[in-house]
Length: 215
Image (cartoon, rainbow, N blue to C red; front, side, top):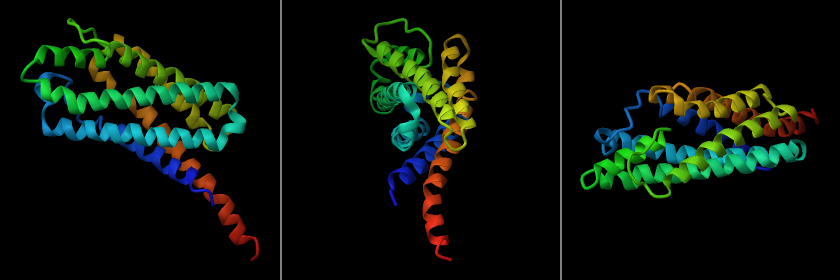
């Protein structure tokens, strides 16, 4: 049995659970909280989430690639770029910003403001471009990939539409208060869990059938 879909399915489900879990009771994105142990744990969980999501999305694409077409391929490429950018952002937030809290708190706050869709008052280099790639790749990639999964008749295909809606909703966050970041993550997390479990179960069905057939 090919283990890739199994690993990918479980990875996607774990990524979705982490994506929801890290939002619960999330403190504000400010200098006062960024260097705390709690934020270190949360940001580390987000890094793990991004890695697991990359594995999960890749497994979904490879398992259904013959039915996804150009839309699905484009969506997969954009979503992968988005998650890679998210991974880079979380590594910066977890490892770099806490070290700068004492020496340059204004820069840290500017980065945090820009990361949640706000505007930085100072110069933060090329980080806005990285945030743009993460946001657009996540939103547009999720939209195209989710629609392609639905059209391809993948297991739990309704979750493909939920993925499309959940990822696209982040485009509205720049015009909404930061508190909206947390509940808006739930649909995407649920979609990843359902799609991941469906992929895992879909991979197990042929093995179950082969065992049952001789009897």
